[in-house]
Image 1 (cartoon, rainbow, N blue to C red):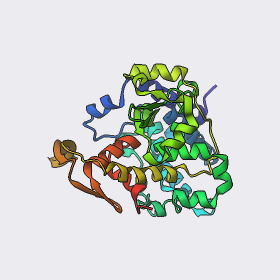
Image 2: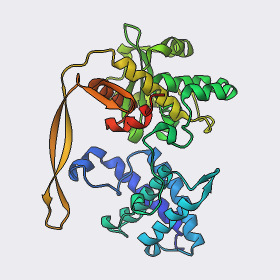
Image 3: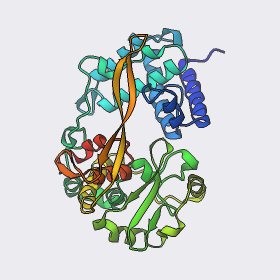
Image 4: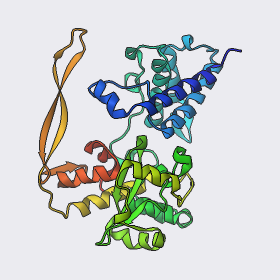
Length: 360
């Protein structure tokens, strides 16, 4: 019995998840010099789960348009799907958000390029389509982010009281929702739990969590919420000497970790509370005096290849960590922004613009 598109999509995504287990993101980047998108591997269970959820909606759109085979899905048809999303009315807004449409384009590229039905040059890009929504770099202009954390708490007192521990923990450590509650990896034991919070000899708190793509990251608690975190988690806080010393130690801890929370109301806009962490921490970090240099990888154009594509050459730029750096309304030492980017799990400093934005 022939499979329908829904089953074909799922089989392709499962294959890519298995491919992702056999290799690493760093190996793929190295193979392509970091300049080519990879649509053949899925590197985390959470990414697979999100792609599959989006693929099911796309399969339904194909069914409604009498598309039954992979061969019938052309780049122009896929673009029609993104334009359809652009024109929908969603909760009073015109069209889906830029993030949603961009993620759907990525899912389609995984399905079609990963399966070999399209060439890499046929990939669809939201930015190439007319009148598509764009992600704002200003916090106040992003959907459901018009309020600061304090404003939201004052206008939603009952919801805040119901989820106070979860919200204050996000504000204290700058966690993403999934990092707090966990997901499908390790049978759901990858959320913040009794193997996650550690205290140094001088009383500072740190949390270790599994971030995007399965990456492990340490994040420091902001000073003004340390006492509250110590009260909430009390005996669940471990001395820093018991911290996982390696990736294998961390994976072992995930197997026995007991998460504190499960999923909670998605109407709670966790990103503005995570932004609140960024805004407090940059002020706190800038009180330190950073020194030394940081080598930053840069790519510069270096002529054309034989096929006419631009040729890029990899280079390095040396930056003094003590030098002043500007993001949004904040001016601080480069070292302070660099440290904050590591705490928040970002690879690039300019991504912090969406959180520091107006400095609210």
